[in-house]
Image 1: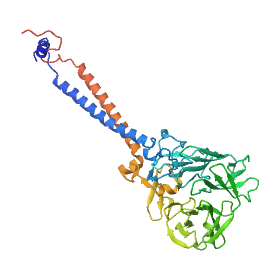
Image 2: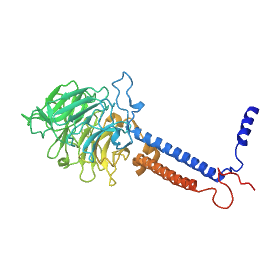
Image 3: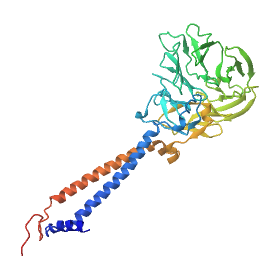
Length: 446
């Protein structure tokens, strides 16, 4: 204590008696420091929130990475919300994103987008893409088939990144007909249950009247099929299902992989609705037991479900399903895409359950979901967990950045105002006025 006290006493002894501390100025300086600290802390918190918001759609989730050595693992869930990513979040589909939950047509961007189970999404690499050629996801979400540009069809393994190219297949609107086959436009493709083959509607340039479909293998094989009707799915790994229509009846025809007819089953569908049926109307359930047909898209949007075994009617549901986008399946129930008047679009079940909602910024026009994804767990988005289903759940990242920018602006304005006030105070002469001496003046001798 003695060693410290003596130097302090010496220091105080050297301070002139006319030096008076400016208590008010010290108080104001301390108040400014406290304000700066509070504003800085608030800005830091908002900055962290905004940073996390930006990274939500960029960083991979541990739960979505396939286990090491288990390349056969498929998709196990789907997102509750799909938000439009920011421009710097990565635009194109990565080589190995892992199994996907769905593909979606974004009308506002004129592109198909691939959707991960956690809601991240990327552009399917279709240069100059239009909605005429929808990508196809296997039931486990691991395999995707799409037309790359206008000249080559691609099958990609989304887990290991391997690609199988089919340069023989191109866009039917190409002027130069260098390809052997051209895809049928506005026609969904269907994967076999084991994900080893993809059935696409296509024709041969030389003989478009006989070749009506192609069976593509992940090994690069191509099998021509000469079979009329709409392909609606697979009954098993070796049996294809076709929706056949007539004047007053419809039937489900089963063929082998070569196109030979195995059996034909009359379907108990509502009468006189055949003229509404299209290539989008029918889908077979993942287990091959049921067929769903959109039988009345012009009014109630009725979905009729029948048995693939005997064609008997299981149920008819007036749910407003469209006839321009294939239905998906959740177990033995149908899921269909719809858009409401507020610009929001979603994938709903016929029981009224809402599975996936899409950011209005997409202008979504069609959604095709992997069956295994919808059979898995729903992953709720950050916005939904924080703000429910309202406007803020879609725009909370922009709001966070706006708040951050506002706080920074307020801090800058306050700092400038205080600097100007401090400068004015420093310009004042403390020795002016009645009495008192300014620091540095000699002491007044009475």
